[in-house]
Image (tube, rainbow, N blue to C red; front, top):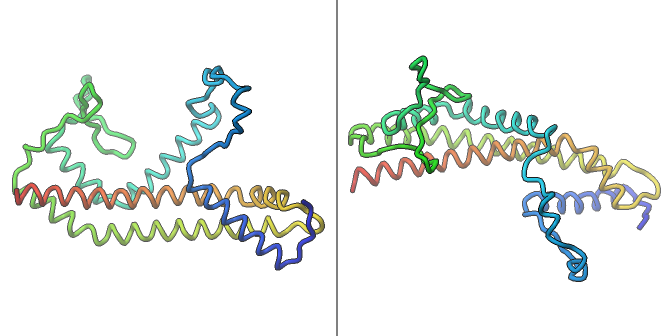
Length: 229
């Protein structure tokens, strides 16, 4: 349908469309197929289904993931230090057989030996009561700062989302004359594409920070439980 919008109508319509798009981002992808269409399809399409990124996207996506991980490591260095000090006591580090040096990952932390199942080779009975108490105290005192940092990543994610919504609204409202809602929506999407990806990136960082803090809380609780058992 083609409509002539005044500025107030365009703003109201923009808010509605942006709200729908934002909700779509948080929901699983679903496809509604007409029952009659199923008679026209077959399972041969599965043989052509992609299960990985396209070649030109793979490197870029991998780089973005590493950037997000890098932000978390730089924001919570003391949390990763505690975890790796604990793992050093209960796991076995991978060693370069030629040089005898410990193999490290992208962020400089040791890589750990794994079992054939893929699980880490570890033995938590190696931890003494004194070591548990030390780790528990460091985690407990660290949580205050980590929670504040996690809140900061959440704020950045919300600001990025707000910036994307503003850009989407600007692109949606800008066309004049007789333009359909669908055309306005597509123009808004195109105008705000870069801000949308940035918002997704910041949301991912915020989610990772939240999960890290939760993991440290659980680790502290497990250490506390083992001391009182």
